Image (cartoon, rainbow, N blue to C red; front, top):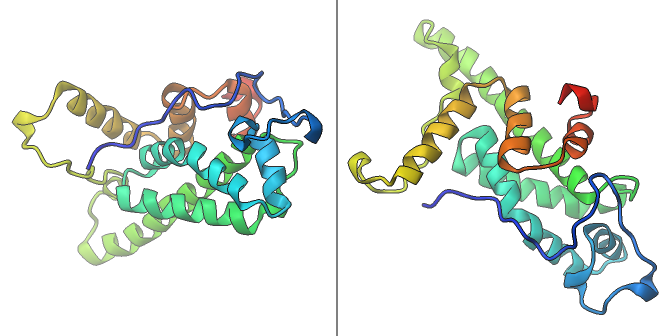
Length: 203
């Protein structure tokens, strides 16, 4: 299985970090693909499910990359991604355009990922007691999904990817989340600050 990578260059026009763009309906293209995330979310709140599907298409790859990097398990990342979009669907009316859609959806995904890490930690404490005290850090050092080739046949890019991933998994979850958002996802500091609910100087 290949590694999930964040896609860049989606169809939206560049905008200032943290700025919510919602144009009057009369100024929008008839093509939903040209709408901003926030405009699509407002349309989805009016029961336009095509708008929801476009949002899923825009964010599924980058969120998969973010969550997989965070939790280190492909299976868990898939489950979290599915749950993230399910929550967007059933909680659509909770979204307000005072925040960017991307900030909202990353917050949902990040919270679900942190919940998964907490569950692992609790399971680890129980299993450590049963096994006689193995290193609890093993709960965060999960094996990466094996893409198939033997170690000596792996490409330099694949080996570098795995080294980066293993290094990320050594970081405390709070630091890991910020590093992934900034250095891998290349989110703006302003947006990371909003997602993590931290002063921008702390990010």
